[in-house]
Image 1 (cartoon, rainbow, N blue to C red):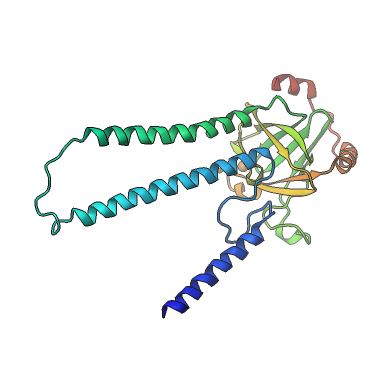
Image 2: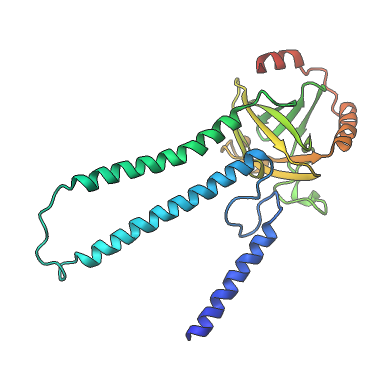
Length: 278
Ligand SMILES: [Cu+2]
């Protein structure tokens, strides 16, 4: 293979990757052969993705620097080039440098990292509440202010509709109004589960007897965001996906009206629930 055909092969591989990523753009579900994170949706996911991108640059630079040092040492001080090794055991300047520089790098990383942690923790400025309960093996979504509660099951492969996705689509998605800050109260009914929607950058354990809080702000637009339980929770762990369906305000109001009839639940203890959330 000459240099030219090697170059054109490399180019076509890169183009294939480019197409792959172009295909993955704007998707809120995993793509075949996808590398990297799903496209961020909402302010938390955007911040998390930019932190990830910054860290990727830093760790790549550190790895390349260490690799270069190793290569230099191996070549420069190999036995044949350096038959009489130096007996040096200390170098104060270098020892201070290799302590202080990593500390500075960690401080640089800590600032945006803590900012994001505290931002994600601010559940009190939210506009509505959804209680999410993990069960073996399905999710239950409860809208305590509306008296609506329903279960969300995987759609079996033989029942899949046209635009439904194998192992990811559910019969009743968690419907949310777009452009709203939503508090999630996440709990469990049996074993440990975990509510994980990658494109919204939300991942939180669902544990029986405990309520964990998180919040999401789903961006404007009608769209489905896909996720899965990501705490190994038993034989059907892989079959309890999550679908967050964002609707515009009018469509959400209409859905809510229908849902109140369809999923009316007498046993939603809304006062108790909200009291325990505050
Ligand atoms: Cu689970």
